[in-house]
Length: 158
Image (cartoon, rainbow, N blue to C red; front, side):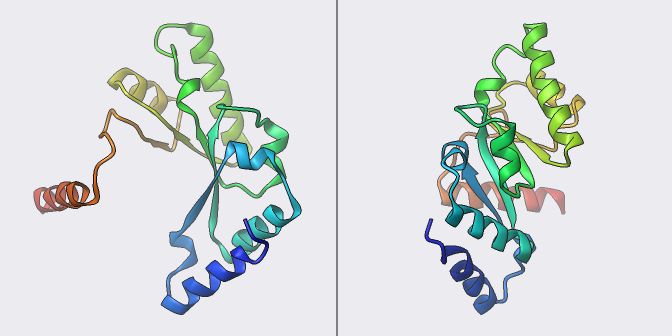
C-alpha cells in the first residue's frame, strides 16, 4: 500500500460526502505480518478518521496476538480453518471458543468465516461471535443475483 493511499481514499470519501463510519477495510493476515511503517501510517489515518480496520483470515498463517495488536484493528475475522471439527472435537471447540473470548475481552468484534452448517452457526452464536458468514447462508453470487435476492427479501419484509 502506498504511504499516501489512506489520505487519497479519505479525500475520495470527502469528495462524495460518504460517511467514514460506513467503511471498513480488510487487511489479510499475510499483509499484517509484513508490518511496515507505511502500513502503520495508513492504518492510523483510517482509525483517526473513524474508518474501521479488519484483520482478515486470522488463523490461516503466521499472525499472532502481537501482529494483531500492532495495528488498530477493530474487527478480527477468524479463518475457516479454525472451525474444523468444532462440532465433533471438544478440544477444537474449546480452542475456538477461547480465541473468541480473548479477542472479545480485548475489545475486538469477531466475524466467523466459512460457516457451513446449522450446528456451527448455533455454536458460534452461543459463543457471542458478532457476525457469521459462509456457505450456510449463501454461496458467492454475481451482482445481478445478489441484487435480486436482496430485492426479494426487502419485498417479503414489507
